[in-house]
Length: 240
Ligand SMILES: [Zn+2]
Image (tube, rainbow, N blue to C red; front, side, top):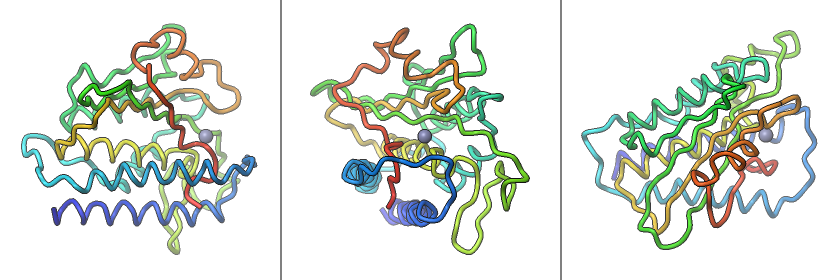
């Protein structure tokens, strides 16, 4: 239990830094101000993370999940702009889920045959079957970033003066990491939800994309992501 709470503290510390980063970090987008929706998404994310802290049984047979900070660093340092695609990031995440004890059948990497670099990852935490699943979605791609436009290398995670800098920290690798680490911890701690929880990490959400992961999954693999409700933490300024 101590270890769990310690991890949670570390991760919520990261979330608090992300929240502060949101207020100050430059972004090329202006989000419409549906703050109630943002708060709702935040509450759900934090709730998922809190649930993870209630388990006391740690499986010894699987690797401890990375901390949110470690995973965010890894994802930021994988360039997933339109030109590079999201396959490398999706496969890196898949390796973490498998190491955390998810069965191979519940960690599905998929890419369109004509866009192999635009990979998606669908992960399922199996529940007790009391209702259709809840689906979380998060895109893995980021907007292009030129070194000369940034104070720091956009493809390195830099912490300075309590702030995190790096492409995708707030849109939306930070949210991807919150979902991934929470799901891995739920698995590790033996939590069995009433219904399946699915997280789809998707390709090509940003402008210029030609293989949008959500559209492609709906059209070709609906069974993998079929759910009662969908929660998208990319709803805007989720951590205000
Ligand atoms: Zn986004």
